[in-house]
Image 1: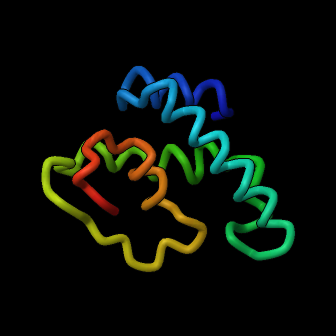
Image 2: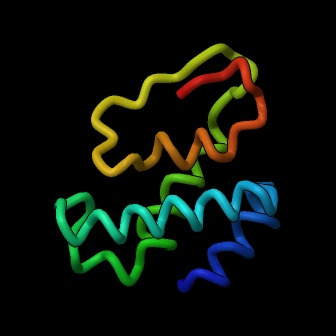
Length: 96
């Protein structure tokens, strides 16, 4: 599944806003740029970053109560899934 297909799922099935999608694009660009210097994600998964990392992380929004104050994501590595969840989050009192 490539970027356009994943974005479609994010919007239609998981209710990501256009603003959140733009933030995800910026985040992915940073991850891929920094991955050249630091091993943030496996090189073999760079071409699948939208499906392998973004969508896998984003699916968690179905199971999280964003009305609570916080959630801990220990050992996120390159920021997955914590940053994807924070980008989705609309409750400014909720912190990942």
